[in-house]
Image (cartoon, rainbow, N blue to C red; front, side):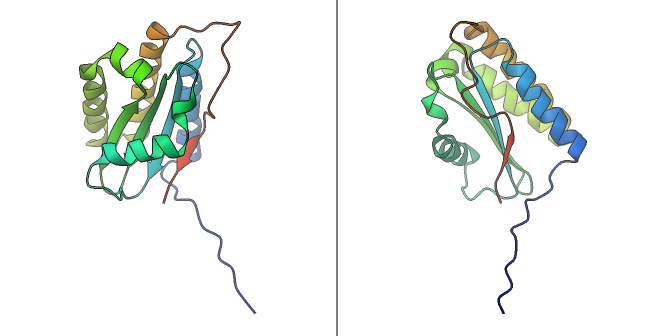
Length: 153
């Protein structure tokens, strides 16, 4: 007889924290046509977390948003690496310093082991930037990407 093992999804956050993070993503997208996703895994398979974020952004087809205004927040918790990758439509509108500040902000929270709090705060602030650059239009806007947290290994 063969015994099949189910792959267990790593438990990075409590159920309550997961719900709060997903709620933050939904809230961040309420007033914008922009899209935001969170990808969390244990270890980063690349030296540079930004390279991994770009790979995931492509794998999740986040570049297919109509206005090229998707943002991926990437975190490798055990390796203590993170990155924010924004598509060309929003990246230039917000400016390089904005994205660097968001990474520094997450690092500040993560250094205190406030992972969920740091993610929620940054997600909401990215949502505000998306709202300013790409306001919601009731006639054309649709949720182009899922709002759930994507888990890697």
